[in-house]
Image (tube, one colour):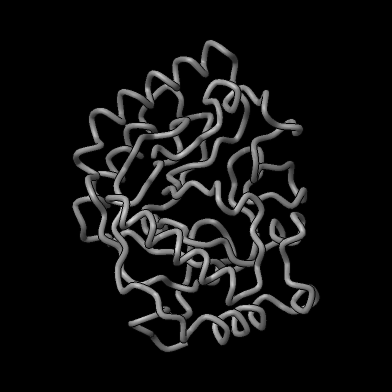
Length: 248
């Protein structure tokens, strides 16, 4: 089943939002991941992800997609992530967004980030999780995010089961849990666009999807990683979870 993304044109034009800026974007000191000029901001938290192997064919293809966007006439509408950060989120951890959405476990609300991470690691480190997950590219959404799904139904089910285990172990009750769309972020949209520009970006995204879907192909990810981050430009592994573990 194809993952359910929001209506593309309505998203790009801001019709689905109650904010003057796209999600994650704010004026200086406004608490966003990025400023309105695209400058990365301090925005700490932790998360459960799988990095894309930088030596893989898929990583090379994702970099090529990002370069196409950077060289396009639409590049001014985006701020780009470094390729070293490319990853697929398995389960969102704890951040200001978790707290805002009411998903922060009560006992962790006033706990510093690094202490929260240690607690999550203690809760999740012994989980029986797959050593690998496999996922494939569905499309490029809005010129910024590669929609992913399990390589087949069994892999999709395994990804969803991993999410359930992490939620149960950590006590994090993610909003719209079952509707989560796996993705690999290449860039953030920094401003809403006009209807005409949105339609052009939609065409551009469809073209890149057709050109690069086979190049990205099926991505084989390693074990789930619990990571800390201070910005959206780097996700630092604290531990592997499941069948392979690393030093905390």
